[in-house]
Image (tube, rainbow, N blue to C red):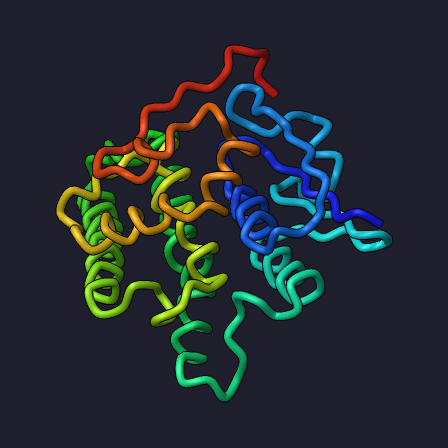
Length: 233
């Protein structure tokens, strides 16, 4: 059975497309456009929680990007791009792989929720303190990552791994929804330059999100993006 990747355009499911292209495995890509911001009904029907990504592999249907990445890397990639216990970089790999969703993306999603609900304009003392703390924590994450990438070329160390695949969309695609500037983080920008030069990444973006410009995605300024003007879901 051919692996099927259900990809929601301009979303974290670009991680899965990217991994498949890096592994150069056979897979079927099914692309779904947002309508205009949220997933269309047919995508939501793929999984009880209606979230991207979703993959199918024979009798297996799996969601959660981290789980999809691990499954594909282990089952179809024979462990490629995963660092195993016993390797000197194992702990770093484990940390950065989980940092992507547990800390970085969750912070972005929280800030996005605050923004779209008008919470950022909260004039209470408690509201201002909370927003200030959110901003400080997010800046701290970027500084921490920038320092790490001043020491090593890839997040886990000397080799490109699934930890990079998990993290990059938070520095690129997610900025379409929550714009933030990377101009003060030269090591992150150099890192994104290395990502943009990878053939696997370029093929993945061309297949999964051809409307997005890689140069803009990996640049300092947040990439401009407007959803297609279709009926909202």
